[in-house]
Amino acid sequence: MSSHAYATYWQRKRLQAGPVPHFTVRRWWPTDGLCDIERVYFEAVRGATRLLDVGAGDLRMMKKFQAAGFCGQYDTQDIGSEYTYTFTDISEARGPYDAILCLDVLEHLQLEAGLALIARLIDLLGPGGVLILQTPNGRCIRNPLAWDMTHVQLYNLPDLWAYVRTFGLEATGYRIVFQPGPRIGLGQRLRGLIGQFVTTRLLGADYADNIALLVRKS
Image 1 (cartoon, rainbow, N blue to C red):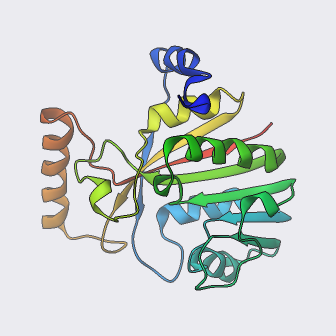
Image 2 (cartoon, helix red, strand yellow):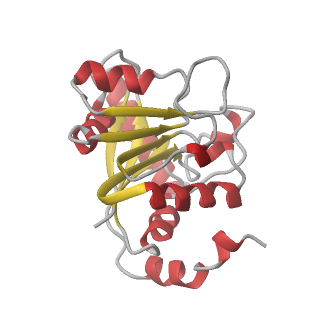
């Protein structure tokens, strides 16, 4: 039985039974600059002296943030071998960090490992620091497990929000919709609205592809 998943199980249930905050929708699209949700992330970390990018992948976020004006120390961690990283194992990192990114990592880990990673990242975060978590939306009508054969675990936003709240931290959540570009035509917008109505009102699912949490350590 997973100790991280069940140690605060009923505390999470009580949090979800109470006033759960509204999770606003933000947008993501492919761009060399910063898209809508990435601007939210950048504004949250831009003043950091030390930043850790966990699961840094192809270093895309590092390049985007530095091009946008990030001037702090930017450490990277990933288990891959196609790029060069500051750390290959999260155990090598030493805090405190003012900001930590963990984008599209949790879905590649089994639940116990994913929750343990969140706890580790919270430990690495300094007072006043921000942890940004992003992962596919487990409630999305388009099954995220089908996007990538290495996806093994899905999260829903209220549950993930409640989990980080059990650490005594504040968290702001977002639902992220994928779109092809910064602007979409009227026809595509109307089709999207109809699809959103069917997905949420008739099927009880969600149309947002990803979820994100900005977690702050007071």
